[in-house]
Length: 246
Figure: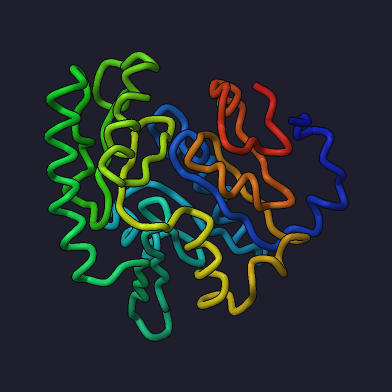
């Protein structure tokens, strides 16, 4: 990973789209600072479109899409995107799975939840689970005492043994049934909302993230950035090409 300070100035000047994770990327120690929110607003006012790409739940994403100065939001690790259409005063909600598939998946995830809580002491269902539509989030350090790495990996393994996809973020292990991830829904968002293929944006778009669930985005984006805490993870499927100092 190269230091972010080495990024050529002409590259920075060419950026028109900012895709970014939220937790520990836009936020700091669980808080959305005025500086971070102001930066999003300033980008929007400058004509640069901001699209959060997060593991956070549907309920939160509705608020983000509606009230933040963003073009839309990809949520629950790529399960859907929301985009608020201000002139029409309506929310566009697009899911990777059908209503029936999501209902069936909730039943299967409930069984996985019970197994994880029985087998991994200290793990807990995330406080935001009631606002989720498609996945199960297991807290390993947000509102619980931090679990050992081996316990986090055990949670991931239980998901995978049940046939689910599991991704580790900076605070949760998220599990779901389906083939979607942050990248697949970002591609769909670009096609539907921005009316351009993501591949055609590579010279004028960046992605910023911090953890393993961002790996598909790190791998695909020409300009993939990591905040400093990405260095806490020793193994990921893909790392960002640039990293912030700190």
